[in-house]
Length: 465
View (cartoon, helix red, strand yellow):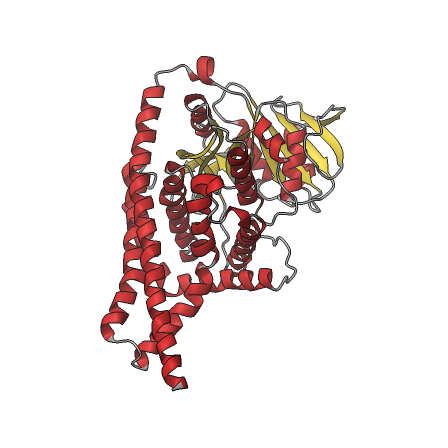
């Protein structure tokens, strides 16, 4: 009798797995369709705006905040790319967050920095600032040297030295396309209700960088990096674009996002205690907007590009995804009051539940589901028709959606010009389902367990090349 109950429970769990993956892929399909139409609308609006004199009529000044900790290898090229933007008025504020290498010295040597007395406004909490430098070569560059406090703390310190009404963080290993800020700031001019806009992040692995500019866009040679290109396309082009179309965008990448400074002051800036400071900030902004019934929006622009370096080893990638999972869980748990709360509109009723059930718990479901379904099939608990149905909803349909996101990129922007690069994209999209996806779920599951059992784990470092 007990065995029969046990087998029935396993059978029911198998159907729960089918429902879970089926509902997830339905959501993905809806996001993909909404992304397609949202990108078409975006491209149409941008084509119309090209005739406007942006430099005279639409330009809004902004401050780029660049937190840097031990980034000696990449910092000079990144800063050069930030200073080369085609935009009339902006500043670049690099915050050296107590680096132990020669990050600060490289900045001093390459940009002729001079220490100055600088009156800053303490809008946000941060560790003490030791010195502020201005560049003799480019008046747009400011460098802040401070006591180490982490990425969020460095962003707050840089924001305290900013002069302009729009601020945004970018990673110190990144390069911005020369027209990226023109395109992202245009979203604030075209849609005054926007208080935050995120751009797309793409991988510079395999690309050629000259004088801070991506001069030749190519797929990376390493298969691990190729898979990450696919992941980023999928996450941004039909993930964030789709959620933005429904006005429930819950994450703007810490690698590339611009915010209105006055709204940032209302929520206290970036939280230095947050593991995932980017998602934590966006969720707090949504809470502030809904609580005060403001007509503000947070949106995503698919065309402005930030190029960043992806981890090149399994160890580094594991560290990154472990941290992403812990950051996601911290944000979900700290803001659990949003869950199915009509007070927060679509964010509380749709966006937050999705991230809680499918993003946060997804690794647990995959780790448990795939082995259990296979064992159930071998033992005869489920039949061959059920097993084929599982393969269809868990792998084949997901593969179709990934291929669709690649087609969406190529139809919209077509940045990979060579046929060989496209073949690499599709090859990586296919083979990520067999081995990599399962390993990736394991990395996230480790992060899940660490957070649940309060295992202390640092930020982690990724080797720069």
